[in-house]
Image (cartoon, rainbow, N blue to C red; front, side):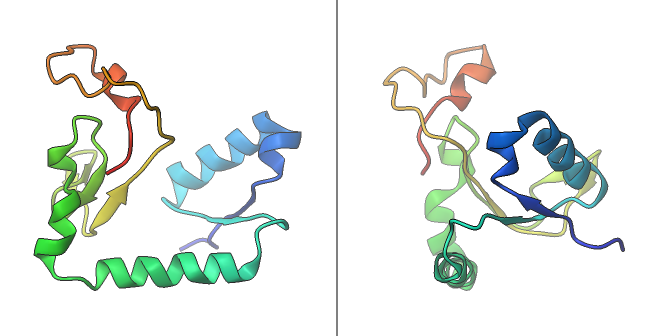
Length: 123
């Protein structure tokens, strides 16, 4: 396996095109990346990793309380075997989050324009 890409978040502000190219390459070739930024204190990063470990060590019924199946915006927890890539089941559990939008009509299950559901809140 290749080295895990390390992306500097500051580049997204100074050269967004280059950052997007690096991000796309990391996601398409490796599947994940490390994100760093000089302004983010290391303690914040360590806390985020600790919170992540704590969440994924919880019993399944607790993780399922924020199941993506309960959110029309396709956000939340996905147990192992639910997500797939190119028709192949992924051997991982995950949480999907995104930028939040606080519009009352975004979670309309009747909206056939599915991309509109993406502008919503996180579980």
